[in-house]
Length: 220
Image 1 (cartoon, rainbow, N blue to C red):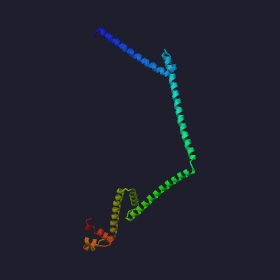
Image 2: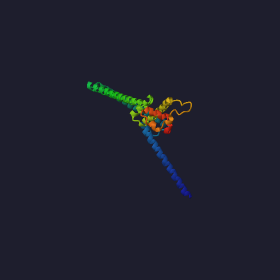
Image 3: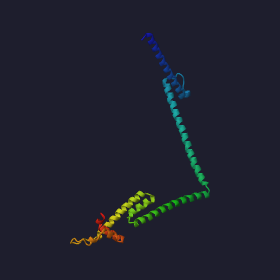
Image 4: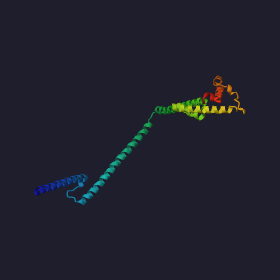
């Protein structure tokens, strides 16, 4: 690289650096003037600037705190004014308006109580119907509540459970009533019993008992 070109490049770099430093200094001075205001003086040394900046920052913090307290007090006063206005408004309500408000509240309470009464009454009726069908108390209550709420999945599931329990009870009752087979191994008259003869029994209880006693004729 020619010496003349290198000297020119160094000179340009130096000029750029000086321009950057000057720009930074001017920006800093402008910031300090804005911050310090009338406290800023030309030719202030570093110690004087430091003390002036510290003083200015504290002053701005104090001013900010004062502004915050003013806003806080204003909001507090506004809230107090609103509460006072509501209180005075309530005092100036006419007797008719007050009575109307009380009547509306009473009507709402009665409607809620009536809805609850209807709910419990309907559930009680449903429960009685389920108990009449052979449901136990707990299953009848759950089924009644599910039916009232429109939860048909639970209703059908409980129906299936009640049916299984009912069939289990019938089998147990039939087993209790089933006579002990003769000691000689006789058929006790079962040889004359057929599926058709059982189905011809008119009494449904007797027919169900006969089916249970001869369940092998029905494939179970």
